[in-house]
View 1 (tube, rainbow, N blue to C red):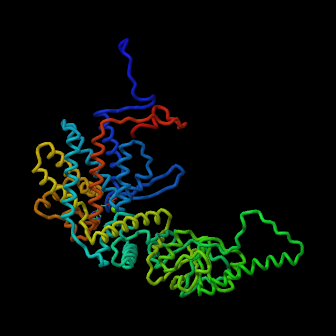
View 2 (cartoon, rainbow, N blue to C red):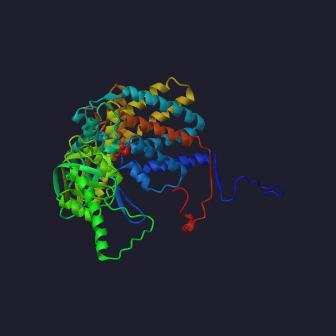
Length: 545
Ligand code: ADP
Ligand code: MG
């Protein structure tokens, strides 16, 4: 530095600043790296990933968002991409990998434009036009399925689960569809489907085929007294959120007992009060008692004598679900307990499953809440099945709430949007046209990846599909339903169907994050807080990798 010139520091010590092209290139590289990690999981022939966390726990999954969540991504741009997956999961429940891959490709295509000297704000503007136009195209493209038909809903679940370890198992598909149909039929005119009404319970052991739909709720509880029955048919259920105990005063009270008779009188009085409480339960006509709080030993004895199957310390969440499933009202004082506040279930029974005692409250007549009991050989299997069920339920909810609006899969939808975006671009002036075309090209990544993951030549497939769409075959895509005969097909006819909402959201959030990242030309980062992090030798353990 020349003598006499003082450097001007505008940032505190420890801050780093990357500006201009470097900032942009770093961000794009990070986003592409994230997209690359999940690419191989996309579609029916996608591979699984084995994730090992820092205490050695293993997750085996095909689910994009699960992979990304488990990676402790540090780079800020990469984090933004991970957020896209999370938003996709929260908003629609499926299509997470698709959203991330499109986002990565959009940034890759943008990079080519930047290399040609096109300014990033121009690219961002073109992308914005493309996102909006794509939403319009998709809206027009959407087709309807019949949400009251089981076969139609099954197609959605099949498309969502075919690449997961369940492998589109007919039994599981049927369970999922039955569960949503049940919750939907109960909600009547109201089209909103509350997925909280479907509980998924996993129990290791047995096989997938032992999984079943319980018209009611399963709770992880044992009966409180061995003399109580294991099974109660035509159950009348009382839900209580008070303790069946004698309240202990908070203030230290002293009772001076001088004679043995006084002690027994005192104990008798306690017993009498507890007896009175259990009598009230009995009088209401209940033969099952589910209590959110504790039940005193003496009360347990009386309840057992009365033949009332009882459970205690049941979580608030489970109490609500049981209420929804059986129609029972949650009562907070015994005086309110009467025949009307009771709920009904065909049967309540305790059963030992996989070494755990569970209580089944099932065969409810018109349950608003149902449970899918997932069985499978190992913990990894049931966990992955649960993720597949979650994705499917998200998809089914979208389709039902949108009156059956769907598109066909296998990349057909992305190919058609891509084609129509190119037509749209022709009407734009030079540079914006380039950006919209780059957006259109980027959408082809879905077909390319699906083909590549299935061991097909992505270029051959792409060329065939472009030609098919030019000829007006709107739903031409790459069909991977049949392992032995993969290839170009009309995906609507193949029954590979996905919710319109999932596609709209995936393209929208991918576009938006790409635009946001493109507009950044300055990264100002605070120094790491001085946590004594183990520093790796040779400058590792930081930076972008
Ligand atoms: P995401 O996390 O994006 O949902 P998936 O691994 O679930 O990723 O893959 C979804 C993609 O797989 C969609 O593009 C869908 O159309 C496609 N797909 C599903 N079933 C088939 C099939 N039988 N043939 C071709 N593509 C399919
Ligand atoms: Mg999926």
